[in-house]
Length: 229
Image 1 (tube, one colour):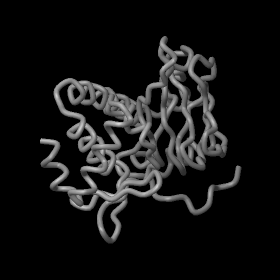
Image 2 (tube, rainbow, N blue to C red):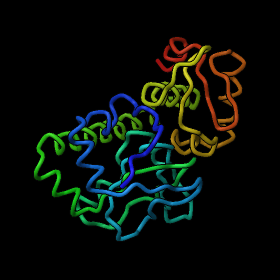
Image 3 (cartoon, rainbow, N blue to C red):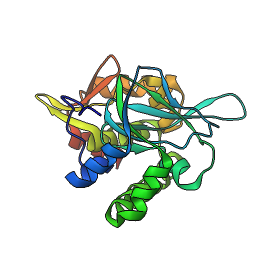
């Protein structure tokens, strides 16, 4: 298997960044590098597939279909993140659909090889556990945010969180490297798309952020944090 070229550095705190070089090499040998086009599904809700994906390049959104036919956005993930690990560990059908937001390159590891690695390498298994615990904390935090804050505060909190995990320092601020649609942001903060559009416009007027096509740059991060609190 060829080595991917010109990959961006994994974001600090992601699964891939927490592995040492030997563990990264084991993961590469256990899987196959695949590429996915924007809009393409890595897997679909209800699938019986159990592969684990480690994102090397690009970003995905994780969405779920509810009984009413509404598609809810659960999370977005970027370079360095591991996704699909639940199905590999418990053997149950996929609980959500994973869809590429832009060109994605990922190591695809069969469940049997992934679980064998975790059983043989306690440090790797511990890293997976750390990721799972962090995501449980993320879910708990989101529920608390959605229950007691205005939409403006929820959007600001989302931007601060994404800047911390996927921010790239630019000349005039911190750019969130994941391409975010207004629909995705609305799903992540449990608000309507129209409400999110109004909040983004207000933040632009205050010169706290600037936006481009599917891109947000935070110009004054500390002030945005104060808005959250």
